[in-house]
Every structure is written in C-alpha cells, then in structure tokens.
Length: 254
Image 1: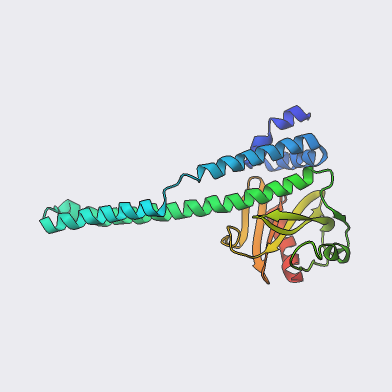
Image 2: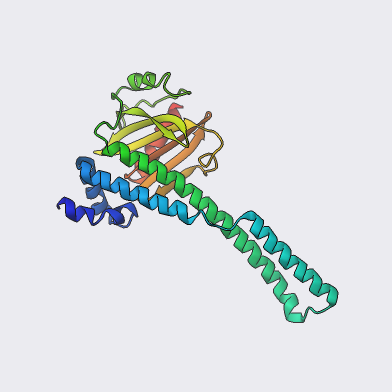
C-alpha cells in the first residue's frame, strides 16, 4: 500500500480505530517512512491541542459553589414560608442526588482530561523519537553503557534490568523533557516494535496525580507507576501483555 493510501488512515490509527492487524502494519510503515511518521506526529499533536482546548472552558469550583448555595437558599426560604408541597419534598433528595452526580462527573471529567493530556504528550514524545533520524543519543544494547551516559545530564539515577532470557532488546537512550523537567527516554525493541520508557523525578504536577496501572492513549498502551521517588511510563503500540512484561522487568530492577 502506498503512502497516500496510508495517510488516509492516519486519523483512524491515532484514534485507535483500525483493526489490530492493519494498525500493526501501519505502525511498521511509520517506522520506515519519515514523511508519514512526521505527518502522524503532526496529527497527534493537533488532536492533543483540541483535547486540551476542550477541557479549558469547564465550569469553575466557584461557579459550582454559587449554584449550590443558591439552591440551598431557595430551599430554606420555601421551608420557612411553608410552601413546600408533597411532591417538592419528594423531589428534594433527587435534586441533591443530581447535584452530587453533576459534581462527581465534573471532577471525573477534569481528571480524564488531565490523564489524557499527560498520556498524549508522552505519546507525542514517543512518535517524535521514532520519526527522528537519530531516535537515541547513546546507542547500545548494554545497560552498563546506557545508564552511565545519563550521569550529569539528569538530576537522578536509575537502574536498568537484565534482559537476558527475555524478548526485549535495549536500543539506547536520550534526554527528554516533560512538564519542564529533564528525564531519561529509553527505547526497547520487541519483535521489530519499539517501546519507549520514560523516567522522571516524581514531583508535584499532573503526572503525580495519575493512578498507577495500565491505560490507553490514542493507539498506544501505557503503564505508569511510582517507585523510589521516580515516575516510570512505558509507552508502545504493542500488546498490553508486552507493556506489562517490560514494566515488571523495570520494577524488579529498581
């Protein structure tokens, strides 16, 4: 299939709407075609910008408080005047339940926007690295070469797993930035698929509030956790099982 035909499927690929086989073939094409990879990155960044803009104009906590106080004041006035009818008495608990439900949905909506913003930005870093002519700055399959390379370049140290007996291969690493914080970006390979591992200091910010575990961002599987003061993210267009297997190796190495 030519580049023009693949480009017509980039949006569906970014939204995770392609069949698994077709998504895997397109992913392989992106790793070998810099032009398509660059366009895929541009579309992912545009989707993330739209998503962030959509969550920017949500109701504030102050507005919710004013609405709640207004409803409470009206309810109190009605009671003092003795005008509450039987059906109003029955409706009051339902109204309270509705308010609680709306507040919960609002909070969950904000949390989802925050989570997707973090994961989308990491997916962008992953795609950008694979689209680059030099995806890593230190090229080595030896963890004892890659780990020391980061000394003096980032403000923390980390351990890398022994991969002997596993299906994973270390490709190399580079310094990256997330939320204006420097961190390590490692690339592993499994069955011709690349997986990005991001390691940052665990500090206050959107990433710190993320629940640990497996999630999806666009067409990628992502797992994150906090360990020994560091925040780990594993991102790739491989199966959830592969993501979890590499994550376990990294946790055990820590």
